[in-house]
Length: 295
Image (cartoon, rainbow, N blue to C red):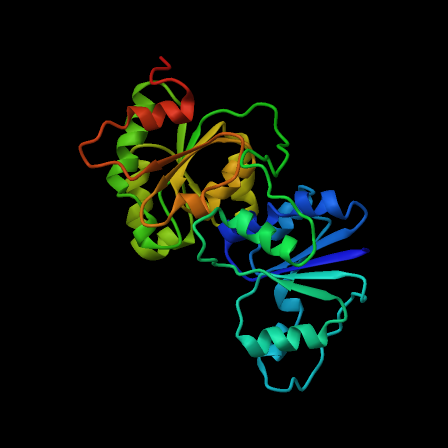
């Protein structure tokens, strides 16, 4: 097989979880070039870190024509019949039928939101095996992204997520920051456009009262900030998956979503439920730093 193309239209966390399939695919198709066409801008940073061979913006492939009953225009697929397309995009039956008919390569579709109570990467690799591709599930401690920095220090706290229900109360994170600073740990906040849209500039000003704030306005720069850190504490969110994939000690706070299915993959991941308002957060801090006291 010469080329494998992965089509992806999801956000950061979904993209990182999908990218966890690349090492198993490389074990099967050692000489294939793997391209990921994604909506999320992080795909180019991942390619720069050699997670895949090439990255494309999914908008450069006119997939929208596949939603028409009879597409008026065609897609110039740079693939042959011996190649493979792994489709991770949502779509109706018409979209998937048109994709299979228009693409000369073999097409395997993975359900981006499976309903099975197993980790999503296990479900996806099972779907690949059902299609005759003998890809084994990635190790739950797999480190997907190689760090570029030897000295990694401090803890980054990310209080946001793509959905408000997946965010632990900000007061929880403020208690964590206070505990870290009390015990002489270098700590920084990280916020992104979602948090700015939800809470406005006053939110950043509030956080700055307890620790410096990294503004996640550029996804690649934000990922580089993570690569400088030793540990990360956040919700079930995209940057939590990036931190885990980089090998940071990662504490992921889960609320309504099921960590059995959606937990980050990495060598040092600790899953914890949202703590109660009166719960001692020393255990969370110790999971991130290895100690409750650094002074």
